[in-house]
Image 1 (cartoon, one colour):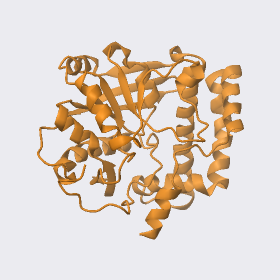
Image 2 (cartoon, one colour):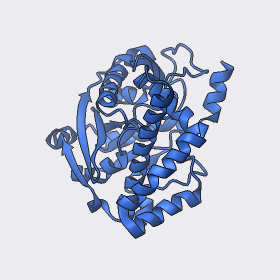
Image 3 (cartoon, helix red, strand yellow):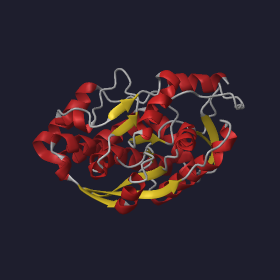
Image 4 (tube, one colour):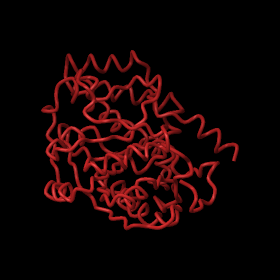
Length: 316
């Protein structure tokens, strides 16, 4: 239990790179474009993989389950490929802001279905994950003509910029702080009742540890949040599982993977919403099978939170 507590407290989503290192990449993009930044990545990633144990440790949680029979140099090679692809995504995010969204070709599967879901007027929960580049997805959803609310926490001291910060434009969506009152639940429900879009990550706990459940994922029991399913049950909003993947040097593919409908459920226990969380986990596992180096959740999802106890119907 003590080890789990220390792991939780030591975890941070902040970049392990310093501000000046990020600035070097931003300058490379301005002077030489995406290719110049990619060229630098091959050497920078090699340094981090070989010389920074923290990078290998963060990647090991996923890699040990995605490639369970790979050890030694083979595991190191998988680590290099994973972090290299993650680095390219971070570069691409900066390119969108510095050079403009026209720098990439983005294809979308599910446009007509998204429009139909929008027209149901129950709002829409857009459930993404730490895969591909979700910022690219946000930049092409203007056709829905609905305000987007993003459940997101920006940690103090994080020097990594979002694409809109590079572009010098206001944030294109309303942010909801999961550390706020009731984890932002009231704000999310209010937005959905107005027919707006709420975007959440389905693979990472951001609010209370009580709002989590265990799902089968890559051969183990992973911890994922279930608040979104509870909100969907209360509002009637459909949950749209939406993944992005990099399918070329200058292209991304966005796909509506599935729609999860959560009926009205009495009680608020994790067990009641676990089947819907499992649906999401199965879709995410299939994505990771097809795109093994585009899964960027470096948190140990398989570590059960210390404060987790069996939820009751009175827990919110």
